[in-house]
Image (tube, rainbow, N blue to C red; front, side, top):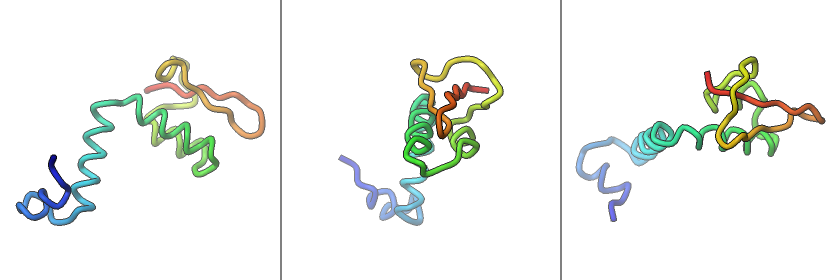
Length: 86
């Protein structure tokens, strides 16, 4: 199994943070639905605003198609908001 340190020690990356950032970027590109689900979860926990959640998910509140598996989140206090890919 490869380790983060392997990438740094081989000179491919300058820091472990750079390796992790690149790995997360690649994972998000390979699985775009994950971004939506993570953004929805962070919004539901109150960590980020609905605007930031939309940006993180790569969606717009003004558009109407469904998110992955119909996922949506509720705008506090009780307004249901469905965010959809651009």
